[in-house]
Picture 1 (cartoon, one colour):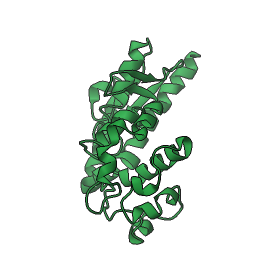
Picture 2 (tube, rainbow, N blue to C red):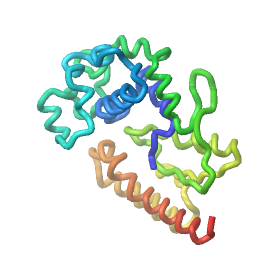
Picture 3 (cartoon, helix red, strand yellow):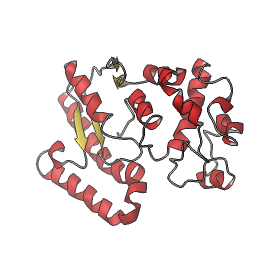
Picture 4 (cartoon, rainbow, N blue to C red):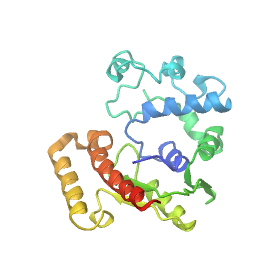
Length: 229
């Protein structure tokens, strides 16, 4: 379901040349804090990673029930409605953190937490192979969880281990089930994107994709259960 299965490649892109995914200034404090608490070696102090003033409260900012709009108003997140302002003036993280990324303990933690994928630096296959039926679903234009190096990479690595994973890209009719179901899903998704207009990018990951992927995955596992797999 539009998952970041390949965490290390995600980090290589976002912390490297980019592009930076929508929501990064929310996700990065969650990831960095969790890895720091788990491994204790991501940074010595928050100011090693975060720009001022974000270094003062980044470790305790999330999870929270405070509305994101309130955090923006309070100056606890970079003033950017796309939540992509990670680096540079007014960004969340220091450029020195970015420059030291390749050999960092942060990258090592991403490798450790990659569910399945490849270390883009070494080509090493990492992670987990399913033992039961599995399906992957998302949209190729997702600005929050990039499709290209997540679901398709997971599918290819599963295939190399003899596991077939149904993988549906809502932007590609040929990847969807044949017949009326696939036609309805593809047409419905395109219609919803059109109806969203200028808001389509902002709504893509959290609102537009989920209903259609939920329907596909639910139908798939109904078939799996009926077959006793």
